[in-house]
Length: 229
Ligand code: ZID
Image (tube, rainbow, N blue to C red; front, top):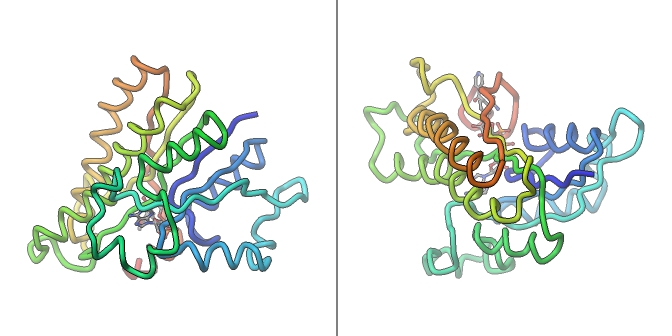
């Protein structure tokens, strides 16, 4: 069977959860990466059976999440983590959650994966028009929503089996003006789409790994509700 790592699952309402379910239904083993500040509530809910109804697969069985890895995809190595984050009480309880460390943990636990899913984005100023977006907000959107994929692929590639695939989720606001998708999020999706082409070339040549992105339709996820979409 195939093994998938799905980055960006913190509840049962988003694309990451739905993709994990589809992969599980097709027989894949599921590992997830959950944003550190959301880790506790996700693991508690999972343990208490709050997601059992939505874990149901077409054959009647329940999706098994083999392991939940804490992840913050805006940090590549422990050296990149600023002190205020490291000591923040929402982060202090977890460890090894930078991208490099998560890839190392998955390698130590399972050796390899076949499928890498990037289903995460964050734009702190998404409700602001681009004209009112700060440099800090713009760069934060790019860091969390675009470079996070470059970093995940870079660090997971060495443990991906040849013939494997990676995928991310984008939005058409990258190529058409969609008011309300601000804060540099439209820019971040444009970067993600361009990077998909370049990374497909590089990862395809070097490791026989496919790189694709899907332009998603509307889904009432936590992220979408936060921007009133
Ligand atoms: P979600 O909240 O379920 O997933 C986002 C996840 O990212 C959450 O679990 C966060 O905890 C996690 N996260 C945030 N920052 C970090 C970080 N630094 N490190 C690790 N994890 C982090 O929302 P979702 O399912 O909507 O989002 C998944 C992907 O789908 C994102 O790339 C979205 O941009 C993309 N997407 C979603 C939608 C949508 O409708 N939900 C659309 C397009 C793309 C869209 O906005 N018409 C109007 C709007 C849209 C489509 C059509």
